[in-house]
Image (tube, rainbow, N blue to C red; front, side):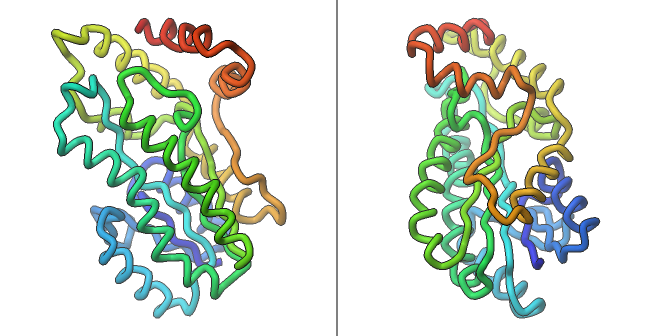
Length: 255
């Protein structure tokens, strides 16, 4: 397969590139820095169009896209600068929209093909003091659910991989105000979140799941990956009263 992987300079994206190449696929790694090979800022629709034209021009087709590009913004919404608001939503949500829109004609031409988004369990369980991060992934979930109706008749599978805590550089690169006089619980909640991520699963475990989603003849529309106590939160949210579930999550983060 000819596969484009975004966010490929580190973390999950880099793990996907390595695993998929070892499996014999032709993988084009893309990132804003260009250290993964192809320079691509998914916040820029024109840059996406150029990159896709170059890839298809060189390889003749595009069989799959794995979108792993993402940033993390934390802290109280009230005190989050608007440039960080835009950075979070433009990268984690609108970038996925731009990428799906631009790659759709190429994926239709090479169908059966697949579009895999790396999302998060935060698409289902909102995280304290990460309202923007949660909003982006909740939006991603709805976007992919609706896009499946459009793309399925053309032989394009739209798939979601939803990790819990993963050990990547995203933790150290999280941006936003951590110390707040008005919201003193923010620092505690974000420190606990960092600890969870540092104890998370290895990025290659996510890459293994991505490989399965790309090669399984009948993959699930979405799959969660991570520690059992994180994944069980999906069931807990479904069956517990909303106030009780919110208390459980808040207690974990001391919020």
